[in-house]
Amino acid sequence: MKRSNLYHIVVFLAAFVSMSCQKSENKQETVAIEAVPNQLTEEEKSSGWVLLFDGVTLDGWKRFNHDTIGPLWSVKGEAIMCDGSGLGEGSGNMGGSLITTRSFGNFELILEWKLSPGGNSGILYHVVEGAQYQHAYDTGPEYQVIDDDGWKGEALMAAQKVGSNYDLFAAPDKKKVMPVGEWNTSRIVYNNGHVEHYLNGEKTAEFDEGSDDYNQRYQKSKWIDYPDWNKSKVGAIALQDHGAPVYYRSIKVRVL
Image (cartoon, rainbow, N blue to C red; front, top):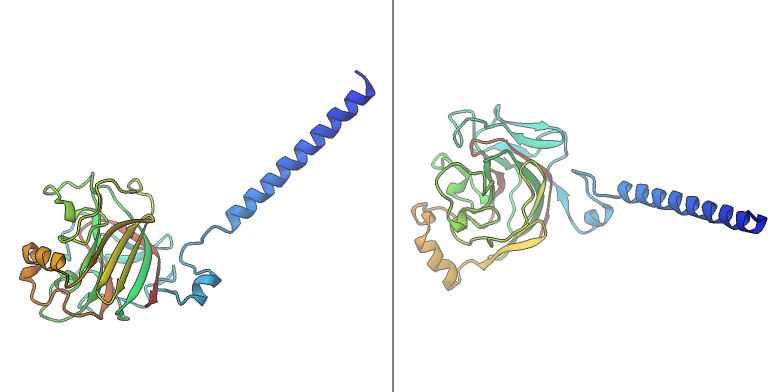
């Protein structure tokens, strides 16, 4: 082989190795700047976002209508976990939804969640406590969290599936849902009666409280039998205990 050819081959290999190392370094840099669970970026902080879960404790949370957290809710693996396996919703003196100690009116909420197979839960807002209420949903509307395909109970109606405004506005049949055991991202926007639901970046529901469409749906829903449902426009955010293991993390909110 001629020296000139050998020289060009050596130069080529050196350039290839250099580019490979650079790509590897860039890849590592990309991984390093990915979102970290339960933390806010500086941009989020400057935009008014506040964490509702620090990844370590349940500070800022309480159990609905109780002074203690109870045995079902805990922090596991940097996530809030409800270990309701084999139990019914709000079982006895053990269960009950976990709610914020802070109340919100107009807000934008983003959080991540994952379910166990066949699991069921929900994200509620404007929840009000009182001895006359047994569950958080007695007063608060619900963003449905459920394993649509793995649910073993009665057949789900459209507005009972994940991403829906429970029993009122159904999420689309075709929606992006991560496999059971993987994290999903949900977003709820409430602004003076205008409500938007998102699941993994896609809008799944949008409506205006008090509109003709809303009122017609309400009259046909189960909520007609709950006299104080959705009456308060300020209240707690709740994570529902529905008798199944469920995990929540990266819970952040900003007031609108």
